[in-house]
Amino acid sequence: MDPDRKTLVFLFGPPAVGKMTVGGALSRLTGLPLAHNHLSIEAVLPVFGYGEPAFNRLVTTIRKERIAEHLGLPRVAGPAQKTAGDHLGNR
Image (cartoon, rainbow, N blue to C red; front, top):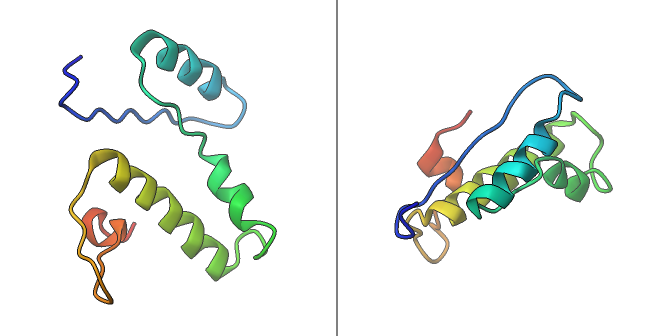
């Protein structure tokens, strides 16, 4: 792998099919970091109920920011700071 090129791999599928197992193996084989998606949920859940608008907004923001940081997307300092959502679109 080219060390100067950022690589991002998404594993998705139904619950309990082995995504973390495959992700762990892929991480060990490639040296790529493994980000567990549920960590964003666990960070917000003590503050907002699952599925509440604020919960969904914050979980989405955490995930997008994590991706933006990994990819080194440009940032604008100050009050007009752009978030990953600005770069990745509102999905």
